[in-house]
Image (cartoon, rainbow, N blue to C red; front, side, top):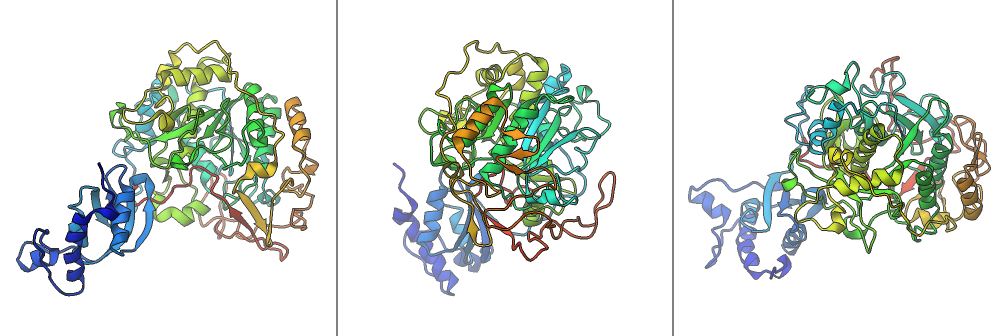
Length: 591
C-alpha cells in the first residue's frame, strides 16, 4: 500500500538534516542519509545550490511530491500537471536529497529558457507535426493521393493570421468576424490571440511550392495533417481569447447555413472550445447547435477539454459529435510508449472521449506579437515561425485534419460513418483507462481501411431549449463592471432558446448579416451591448504589428498586446473562464 508523503515518517527524517544545513549547521542522525553539506565537507562533491527547481514526480505521484514539499514548508510556486512537476524554491542541498525519494523522477534548475535557433529539425523534435503525423499514419494517406483536397474545414476560433504556411492564395476563406475587432480593418478576421492560427496550422498548414502527394518523407516543409484542405475561418474570440457562448452558437449557425455556398464544401467543423455547462446536453443550446451541424452532414470535432478527471466540457458531452482527448505519442509510431497527459479530460458515466490524438507539446504556427506569443513566448516559442502548445484543442485539430483526408477518400460518407471508422480503427494504449482514452489513438490509414457501421447513432437528441446562462458555466465576459449573464446575447438582445432552436433546425437563424435581431458582420455592428454602450464606431488600440511583414504588406509599429478601446466609452472587456482548450503554453521542457 502506498503511504502519502505527508504521513511518511522516513522521509521526514532525511529532510531534517537538510534544514539544519540550510541554517548553517550540520546534523547527522542515526540511520539517515548523509546530508549534502556534510558530503561537501568530506570532499564528496558540492551540495546543490539554493534556488527555484522543477521537481518532476514519477507518473501519478505529483500529489505525493507536492505534499512532501508542503510538509517541509517549502514554497510550491506552481504545478505543471502535463509533466507531473512542481516548481519549488529549495534550500542548499535539498535537491540532492529529494532525488533519492522514490516518488521523484527528476529535479532540474528552473532556469530561463534559451530559444532554439532559426533552423528547425522536425525529425529531432519528437513532438513535431512530422513525427506525430507519422505516428498517426496521416502521411501515409498522402502517398495514396488523399491530402484533403476539395474539403473545407470550418474553424470557429480566434481567426487566422496569414503567416507562412497559411498565406497561399485561397488557403483561408474568411467567414464573418463576430468579435468587436471586426470594426477595425487592421484587426478584422486576423488572429490577435494566436490560438486559431495554431489550430489552422495543425489542420491544414502547407508551405508554398510543396506537392503534397510526394511529400510524405519531406522533413523540412511545414505541412498540416490535411495540407490541401482549405480553412473557413469564423472568428469568435478577440485578443485575449474572450468570447461568449452566443458568439460561438452564431458561428456554428453561420457555418451550417453557408457550408454549401457556391465554391464552398464545408464537411468538417473544428471547435476547440468548451464550457462547464450546468445543464444536460439534451437541453443545452450550444450542444444543440453542434448537433444541427452534424445532422447537416458536417463532421463536428470537439475538444474534450483540459479538466483531467473533472470530466469533459460542453459540447463534447453530446454523444453525437466527435469528442477528442489528448495523447503524448512521444513522436514514435508504436504506441507502447504513449501516455494520456494529466490535463486531458476524462469521461464520466457513459459518455467518454471517442478517441485520442496528439495533443502534447505540439509544434504549429506562431503569430508574432499575438497575446499568446507575448505572454508565453519565453516557454512556447520554438523559433521565428513555430510555437509549441498542449491541449485537447491540438488533438481536435489533428482529428479535423484526419476527417478531411477520410472525406476526400470517401466523399459520400456521412458524419456517423467517419466517426465509426475512426473509433473502430483506434489503437488502445496499455495502462490507460477507457475514461481517459476512449477507443485509443487514431490510426488514419487503419480508418481508411475500415468498413463503418451501417447503424446510425440513436442517442436522445438535444432540444436546445435550456438556458444560455446554463451553457456558459464559468465562462463570462465583463464590461465596465457589468457581467454578461442570463438570457442575453453579446449584443444585449434577449435570447429565446426555444425560438432559436426552431430557426436553427430550419437553417434560418441567420438572415443575411443578422442573427438574433442584431447585425454582427464586419463593421456593421449597430446594436447595444449588455453594458448599455454602443459598439459602433469604436477602434481597437494597438492594432498593428511589430516590424514584421505579411506576404503582401508591411506591419506597422505596435503589438497586439493592448486590450483597451481607444474611445473613452470602452475600458476593456475582461474574460472569466478558460474555455479554449489549447491553453497550455508554459512548460519549461518544451524547448
